[in-house]
Amino acid sequence: MKIAVTFENEMVFQHFGHTEQFKIYETENGKVVSSQIIPTAGQGHGALAAFLAANGVDVLICGGIGGGAQMALAEAGIRLYGGVQGAADEAVAALLAGTLGYDPDVHCDHHDHEHGTSGHSCGAHSCGEHGSGGHSCHG
Image 1 (cartoon, rainbow, N blue to C red):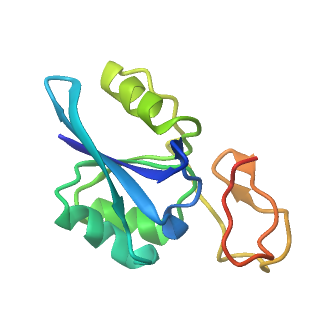
Image 2 (tube, one colour; image 1 turned 90 degrees about the vertical axis):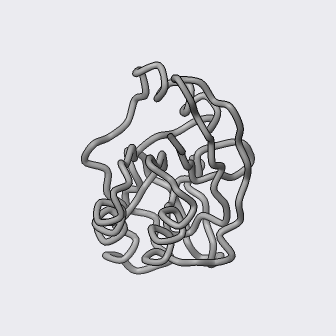
């Protein structure tokens, strides 16, 4: 099984559509056998699901993610574990152990608000300002 995690500075990156890289873990018999960091090359929301499918990914762990991206992942047959925070390696270990805390109703409303405001929800936390163009939701 291949598990992808939105990835930045060893942590689960908190906005799927803005992730600049994934850490992809190859697992066998419930254990990680290899991992690699793959840049997305600025793919954007819709193309990221196809990018993951082309890389043979079965499961995605991420922070916030919008409804359109969730549908694209479902259509690609990729299981989603959203609303996850913390270290990427620990999240994968928890998933393999059956103890991963995630939000089955995760939603990120980045397209439903005015950029530059700080009142939207990204997963289960507020992620702050967007004025700089690119952001990360590391509260």
